Image (cartoon, rainbow, N blue to C red):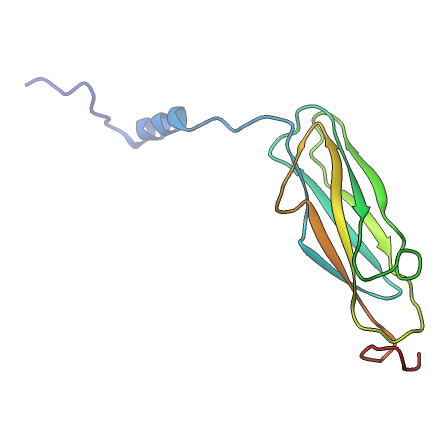
Length: 150
């Protein structure tokens, strides 16, 4: 009786065939993104924003993180953000940007800072994580409004 030449006899052969059939991991310049869609900090503290490079590390890459709106006022409520972040070829490490939140004496509702990644070179932006919001909680004991002591 003749044996079927296409029959696989062992599990190790199946594993080898699966590896050969698997698509290769995409090498490339990667994708840049802000780690979270939203952050929270209280007046008088610092919020740390994490920017990731994933899905490839080929070639250098750079991007700017900027504050571009929200209900908080740059200078009065937080230190304005415009930071250039850079990666060398082969570098997939995270980058961190710290945003100091001003401790004022005014009782006010939660304020926001809109953040955006802009001017990316050498890598693409993740469209779902190219922006983020920082919520600034009040520490003056009031629920907000124009009155109140602090």
